[in-house]
Amino acid sequence: MIEILGKTASINVRKVLWTCTELNLPFTREDWGSGFRSTQTPEFLALNPNALVPVIKDGDFVLWESNSIIRYLAGRYGGEPLYPADPLARARVDQWMDWQATDLNRSWSYAFLGLVRQSAAHQDAQEIERSIGQWTHHMRILDARLQETGAFVAGASFSLADIPVGLSVNRWLGTPFEKPELAAVNAYFERLSERPGAAAYANNSLT
Image 1 (tube, rainbow, N blue to C red):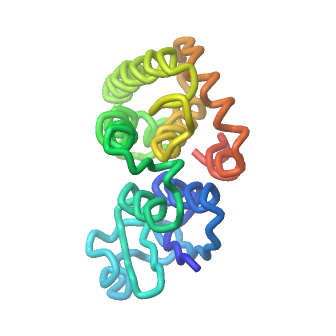
Image 2: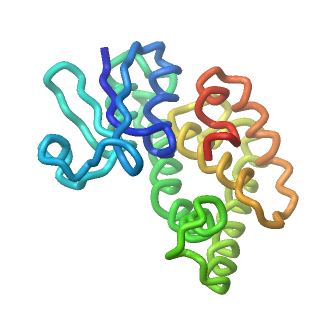
């Protein structure tokens, strides 16, 4: 039984929840983070000194960093269809996972926190517009990639990369600002929404 520490409002926690669903892994979850149990307690810091969710416990094994967690789960629990053993196919999955965690995440952070979370520290109108511009740029990159594959971000088949990227697309669709028409992105999200993990953890009520 996998133990997951972290609140479902966290996009990174939802990566782990969706992955467990794809792998049919039983899990329990405890609410940790803002609004719930503090991650600054000695108890939590002993698990993750960065004081961030998610953290998993798999027996005596403790792991943090969401992408590392989902790679571990796929590697240990029969997830080769999601995370291929072939080095070339795996590198493509890793490429898009890392792109989501770095370039894409950084682009939408300010706009999302200002417009959806209504963070007082993220209300500079010029910074919001700058963030929207960067976010749109990266979503156009994703749209072009999806036009190329006609299916999923790493290729013809659903992979581990579609979990973090799909969650970011959900945030794109759920954040209130005027967006360009990105037909391939919209079709991609419809395909993802047919999966039980996406239906549970990547819908606009969970941005």
